[in-house]
Length: 126
Image (cartoon, rainbow, N blue to C red):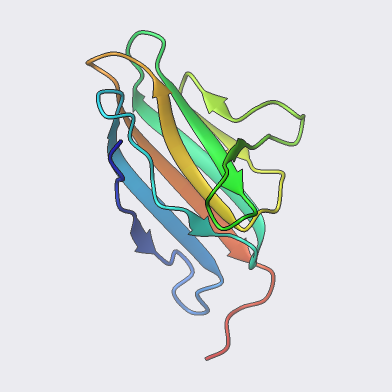
């Protein structure tokens, strides 16, 4: 299992109240994951997955409350598991300590990108 690093940007460059995390090149060959994002400071959390899913490709959005020892699949507001088998954007319902993406299935053509965008409940102090 390989861990793909995030590129972090601030779409709202004035206050840094919105943070965007991007990871690319997630493949099935090594069942890639992303690092856990500390998410408790964020009131709103959304995720977008794009790329080539290949045969039965799946990227799962997981959360942890125990510091990253145990991970569980998160859900959208309708209660559906955040298992992406096609490109789309979803809101993340649960508030957890850490959020990550993990490739759980696919083939040799699977190559995915994941983007998290999160808005802080209150802007950080300067």
